[in-house]
Length: 251
Image 1 (cartoon, rainbow, N blue to C red):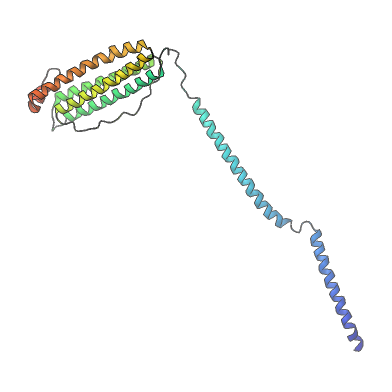
Image 2 (image 1 turned 180 degrees about the vertical axis):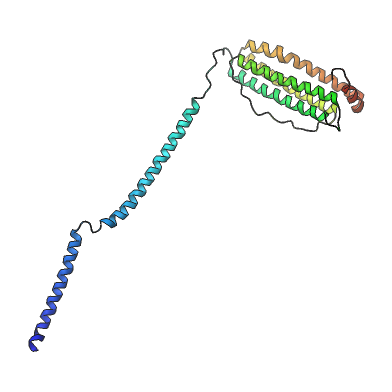
């Protein structure tokens, strides 16, 4: 027993040394084995690199979007209308003024159509006024068509704009409607003078002659005729005056 007890401390020391050596050997193998932390590093590195790659790919997609947008612009630029072969001494400002006048003629025809329908109502019942304003609406549409034809004749481009709706739907009496028509015809005449000024400023004598003979002359006559009708309606009175005008032969 004494001999066994004497060997116990030595045995414990030997076992401790063996355990210590085994742990160091395991640590050494772990350090020497390059695959020990690859999975961990790969998991982090894969997420990071994939994230960056995804971001880069997103940027590439974004840049492609810009390229597509650029191509869209390039495609749009290719649709510009070429200059007409017949265009000569036709300034851009004259062309724009004529396009505005086309729109104004259409608006005037729109207003006259509204007036015609007002007097065709059963509670107004003035068919002569209806026929009169229908004819004025037709005249305005024909003027817009002839001006579009002239635009093409000179090598310009017809740009149609939205037509403004009439400000009223109830035009009141015949006298009130005639007064509104007179003011509108004066506005049309002023716009024609602006077209004339643009053509004159750029020495476009063909446009000057066309505007003056086709539009300005008849426009002055129309203003004079409407003024006469208004004078007669005011002189006779609203009721009887409307009745007599409605029975005129030209209506």
